[in-house]
Amino acid sequence: MADPSPPPGAVALVESPVQLLNVLEWAHARPAAGSGAEDEPLTVVVLSPSDPTSRGQLRRMAELARDEGAEVRWFEARGGRGGLLRTAFRLAPTLLRVRRLVVGDPFSRLVQVLLPLCRQADDLVVVDDGTATMEFTEILARGGRLVRWHRSGRRRSPADAAFGIFAGAARRRLTPGRGSRVELFSAMPASVPDGMEVRANRFAWTRGRFGPPRILAGTDLVGTSLVETGVIDADRYLAVVRSLAERHGIRRYFAHRREATEKLHRLAAETGLEIVRPDLPLELVARCGPIGKSVLSFPSTVVHTLPLALAGTGVAIVVCDIEQEWLTAAASPRAHSFLTDITHTARTLHDLT
Image 1 (tube, rainbow, N blue to C red):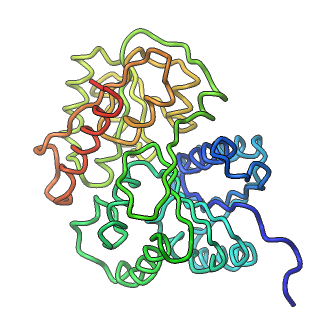
Image 2: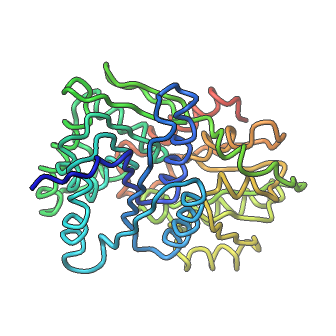
């Protein structure tokens, strides 16, 4: 018997705190965009990650989403053998009927496996997952495989080959011109394929909900997980951070949520920096304050998002170049050019030093 209940409103699939932040920014921007969806209910499906820091930030973000009127459903899709299958079974009644689907990470294997269930979704929205947005639109434009830039130089495993079927289907599903509306909601610079709609994320919800921050004298440094992803050599990174701290008088180091505890302990011991583990995405932490008068960052998402979140506060965002010799032998051939592009576009768009 057919389900007599009405189809759900917008359903968002998220796996990180930043994705959920950008879903809230998208939901806030809908009335301003004249979408007519001001009263459309929003269901956030959290496909929980494994690492404790990300889970903690997601719990806090889930509280904020509920405060904004969203329904939040938490799934342990990585929870042991059969976690994905159980999640798909429990979500099937919702996904089979959803018409507006919001995706936080099109590269995610979990999302790619669930996407075929959303057969009635004729309105697809991709919200920012940071710098991955730039490579996502590039891949769509040239029809390539949905593979992250830092993995593109690695040999494909049997699991990669198996999931390749879902990745190919996801790319086709998210490509405009197949009977569905596809929108990108992003703060990142991206060249989209023909037919894809683009809406700029200006972090209006963040600025309206938090701050303005208390501003401290001095400079803060934003850490990166490029060591953990195998792109930058760990010893070289430590030397660079120590040099930057000495030259700029840095006292606080805002750790990326995926940075290893052992690395952070070593940084604290050898540089004297105060390690700060944010309990929310850095855009919100910086907006709440306190934050340094200057914020120094390696090429990452925040060199595009912090200028928007901190607009009007007087805080200067400074981006540090990644040198070729810092990279490991295992780094993707695209790594240096991709990171350089992030730096160049941030300096150009946001007038960064």
